Amino acid sequence: MGYRLIELEMPTGYTDAELKHRIARDLRTNDFTWQIESKSLDARKKNRIHWLLRVAVHSAVLPGKEPETVQPLQIMHKPRKSRVVVAGSGPAGFFAALVLQLAGFDTILLERGAGVEERVGGIETFERTGTFSPVANYAFGEGGAGTFSDGKLTSRSKHISAEREFFISEYIAAGAPPEIRYMTHPHVGSDNLRLVVKNLRERYRSLGGEIRFRTTLDDLVVVNGRVTEAVAGGEFIPAEHFIIAPGHSAYETYRMLMARGVAFRTKNFAIGSRAEHTQEAINRAQWGRSSLPGVKAAEYRLTSEGDGKHPVYSFCMCPGGMVVPAATYPHLNIVNGMSNYRRNGSFANAGFVAGVHPDQLAGRTVTPLEALQWLEDLEHSFFTATGGFAAPFCTMAGFLSGREPREIPASSYPLGLVPAPLYDLLPAVVTAALREGLKDFERRLPGYGDGILLGLESKTSSPIQVLREPGGLCTGFENLAIAGEGSGYAGGIVSSAADGIRIALRLAGSGG
Image (cartoon, rainbow, N blue to C red; front, top):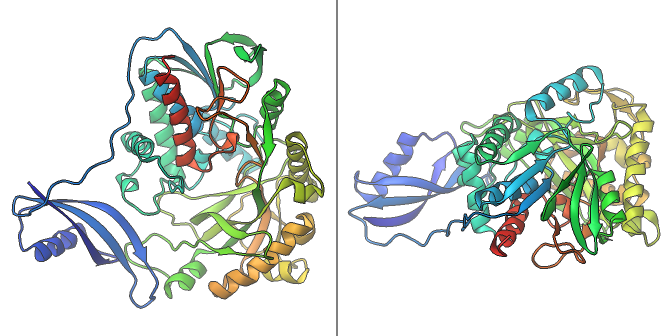
């Protein structure tokens, strides 16, 4: 069987039949099979927007051999006597537990929040009544914060091909759309993610894995650099190995780890607000028209040098989505974005943030513990500014001029907007950078400045990073690893999952 990889340009509304006809015309044969290897939208010329496809074609009439493929993840199963406690069921924690269970370990997965079904109900109640649930919210619960997001699966991490392929295959088997394998900017959608994480849970349990919801990791028992027990749910849980994947929002978990001797350092991260526009405005700015056949909604990715010291960029853009109240605790006010698979909402939103270092924000050199406290205080100040979970907002024009809005516009945010001087609520160094970045964004995407800014976007990444050895173990510990976004070494669903997978593979390879 011969093979050829061909590149094609196709109109946005093409059908499979039209694609097959195009391949047949180019190859001059109808005897072939095909699959899409990659697909991206070329919108550089608004009068000629089209899909760029790379298609693998197999046919007896073609010369050429099959290309080398990504080697599958090698997970060696064997009976093991070791138990592993994994805390946190986000991508890093869950996939670490799954790989270890496949490798023959006895694993227990602890999750402070509720299962996804209860999370859905808790979030619906929160958005309807403003009553916050500590176990069923946008941050904590089964699948982590990513369960209620756009489910973007892009990653800038290199050298994770096998881990990514394993992750993608597991996601598709659990109900994610197959296109995530080949889209240049793949996304699952929050509606699909609810099903995916539930099905992954059942797969993990079918392998003998144990998962305990509503069970917070309260403490670790450490003896001479070795963890002997996890304290969770009022129980002491002994194990030979421990992997903590707390995300970057569990402040008390960070503080507990520091109290038990785990070393962290501060690092750059980003904060700002959420930018919101009508989706039609973004469509027109990107495409020159309100809609395109075969394309859900227009996206954007913008970067700027800001004030020359602090880069400004859009983050986690959610086309056709909504801004959500992503509070992690009942006294904090934070926003984030989400969208469903169809991306058919009336609004578009994205994080609008500036890169900074905790030392710059505090005006002095700070410890990791002080950096966390500074960030928590900032998140609390936004709660105080509105007296709850309503989002403080201003227009982009008002952000530049220093004027508060007089009218409250339509918005996707479910708990209401309150006019506020965001330019004063944010740190001065962040406001200065964002103002320069906003001018830049408006020049590059006409009409961008007609949107609004709302709330505090503070969860782009962690402001601290654990000190760990090449194998993933925390420095100074024999059997403790911290994985995913909470470690400070990953950002996003794919890189977090890959981090957890790699730590699990190293543990399995060491013999357990």
